[in-house]
Image (cartoon, rainbow, N blue to C red):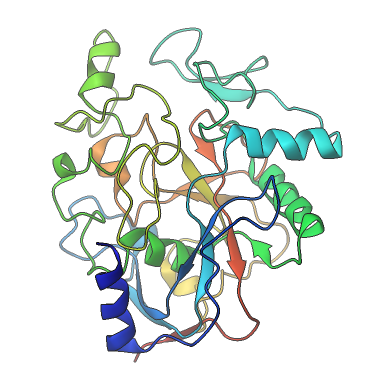
Amino acid sequence: MRIAPLLLVCLLVGCAATASLDGPPDCAECPELVTVPAGVATLGATAADPHRRPDEMPVRTFSIVEPFAVSRYEITRDQYEAFVRATGRPVGGECLSDRRQPGNWVHDAETTFRDPGFAQSGDHPAACVNWEEAKAYIAWLNTRTGGGYRLLTEVEWEYVARGGAANAMYPWGNNPAQGCPFANGFDQTAVARYQRMDTSGYKVYDPLACTDGWLNTNPVGALQPNHFGVHGMIGNVSEWIEDCHAPSHDAVSEAGAPPVVKGECAKRIAKGGSWGTFGHNLRTAERFPYAPTHRDDSIGIRVAKTIREGIRVLPVR
């Protein structure tokens, strides 16, 4: 049932011929990949979005002229554990968590990807992973395979998240309450758990008026995929992307490449919202800027893979 939208995209914009990566992973510890076809990508929030912010504007459109691959699911705890064990990388704490007092998120020295403050199994997404660790994980993947693994750019991330659809606020449309079949966010399950939380400090408090069935993270693939066959782009855990945060989308290059900044990048971007994210923060255009060393119980990893080298995106004029 998910093939028709992909064929429609190809008929409209033309998909470059290439061997599909949909199949067995590149290695035993590698993620399963989905080939994303060429198409037209929209970046940013429109004027019709009541929650848009200056850094989500202006809306820009790009033509993705080469297919690329993306992990079908977020990187799991087992997959990230394989990297940590193989490389001997230290397991960092100081992860942002509310384990000590529900609703009060603070950096906690004992909170790590192995213990994010709530129960997980190996098929849940890895959380409490910072941007630098995400890059190290990808570098390790490239030593285990023929290479080509990387983080998504913001243009690519929004293209995959929208699943080739028009520029609605959410991949499923403009009503956040219709998102529970696809996205694990701050739903009515969370409302019941956090009923004593002081919400007076929130400028907008809009939990999802539906139930996705999970309080914290869910096993990857537990909810419905989008039209590209990708699961969990919205909710569950946010996902680090390559881009450095800039004040607006004007900083994105004409080719859709991440902004170039002078000196070191102070803040990288996580996209997609998470199990603890309110409705308006689950929008496709939403950006969460954090220091590359920031660990959070609701941020993890999704990877991309270049199928063949060359220009991937061009501006649509």
